[in-house]
Structures are given as C-alpha cells and as structure tokens.
Image 1: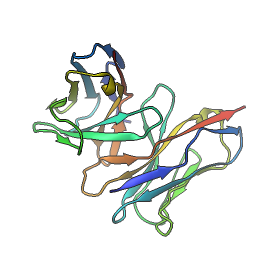
Image 2 (image 1 turned 180 degrees about the vertical axis):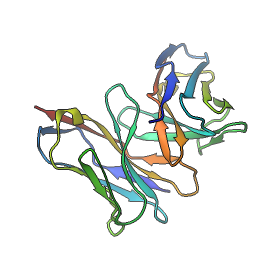
Image 3 (image 1 turned 45 degrees about the vertical axis):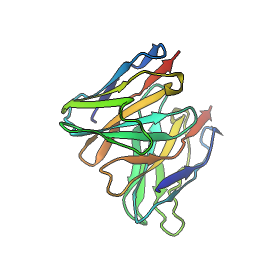
Length: 113
Length: 113
C-alpha cells in the first residue's frame, strides 16, 4: 500500500544552519504530498504541499519539491531558527480516500542558539 | 485558519472501563472527520473515517466494536474506547476537512491503568 518513509531524528542544528529532512514515498499513481509541523503542545499544522510532479511547495522559508523520478519530497530550509524546533511529518494523500493521509514517523528538530 | 478542538486533552482510566473523546470543528462544518492513533516515536495511523449522519469507515485491523465512532452533527465527532485495556494507551488525534485542507486537533493522551 501507499507509504511514506522519512529520516529518523532527532536532528539537532545550530541556528542559521541548513536543514534537510528526507522523505520518500511509495504509492500507486501520483499522490498529493504534504509536510506538517507539530510544535510542542499543539496540533499538526500544514507547512506546505505539492499536488503534482515538479511542484515546489514553500512556506516560512521551507521548501520541498515533488520529485517523481526519485519518489521524494525532501524538506529544506536555508537558515533555521530556534523557533523552528518542532516535529515534522511528511505525508501523502491516498488516492480515492477522501482526504485521509498516510504519515511518516516524524522527525524531531531541535535548533540551538 | 480553521480550528479543531479535542476534549479531554488527557485522560486516565481503569482497565475495563470506557472513555469518550470529543472532536469539534469550532468555526466550520465538517461532514467528514478522521481519527488517528499515534504511538511513541511512531507515525500517525488512520483508524477510521467519521461521516456525519452515517456509519464510520474503519481501517483494516481496527475493531469497530471497540472503537465506537459517532458523528452526530456537522461539528462534533466522538470516539469511545470501550472496555479499555493498557494496550489501548496511546495518543488519539482527530482531523476535519475544510475545503482542500485538513485541520488537526491537539490530540488526547489516553492512559489505561
């Protein structure tokens, strides 16, 4: 079935460092892809999304490009801030499932001053 | 953006008892809500799709008689864990759609002693 694999954390970076969190997917067809972020004590929030191959989603300095050839949707940010410390989830929307999502295990990011 | 709430945020119950978790869409109506379960350091696993006015659709392997879902109105879905056991201890998260986007509640931590 459809699934998402993302790099395991925790990831610890210094402020202003470059961030990459890898995400690959397995799916029939071309699912929509998402990155969600969960700040401590809060619910998941949509960070960015891409609905077709070569689409680039971007928000708050984060970017991810839908790569069909490598079935990947890696999350990147050029300069992280302490406030980016959170858990990041890669997800895909399953075909013919309404809006249900399949999630990766999540990657915890800690940014230190 | 749209807000989804859950109540309670955490609950402790004794083995064999039942516990009800509420999921509400606060400023929008949702004909479909989703219930997920998250184990520590694991991804969110979809348990069921809750449909207003009709029966819920359960994922394979989820016991419908154990996890009772009622979606009685356009703003409220409830998940009742019946005859809870320690292995039901987990983090339960609901979500609701508004348009093309899914909004998540903050989750409910259930501990069964």
